[in-house]
Image (cartoon, rainbow, N blue to C red; front, side, top):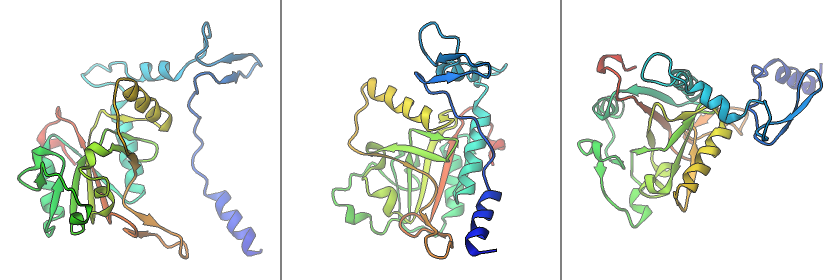
Length: 245
């Protein structure tokens, strides 16, 4: 067997689990009996993405939407698979405790969260990005997470300085546990809705896990071009202090 056949065989044997594509509003879909319907079209009985979201968000006998726990579990699983880590926390006191333990040797920490004033430099504007060259840990809020790829969307106003999430040695992001969408389709719908509501920004990005590369001999190296580690804190203010992990 040639090297080519071995590589193609390995790729074929290591495919991800099959997953249905999400419905795209306005797309023409054909049923198994040959009838067609346009998703989201007026008068169509086809299920739209909005219908699916509404269904998933029905109350499940408690104060949380039915899909929150599943989306959070998927997000954490994917993030850990790409080299990151996640903690569900009840508040910023827990975040401080975890960061003090995991980054006890950090000499300089900056944060865009005023709740972390006891741990980091907060409320500071940096005119010169070069002053951030010795940052060991940056702790920033992000708008939301995406379950399918473990990414968080963050705009420039939450970055303090747009170079910070990429120049810091270690990065921690804080999102609300309920602010996780299933996939990138829903992510862009959420961004579009925010822009329609008046949100403006000059720069934004999705960040998924620490910096990594596997270009050389397929050897994975973390922190090659940016943060060496990334933690995402899922803020669940209704959770008991004894229940975090």
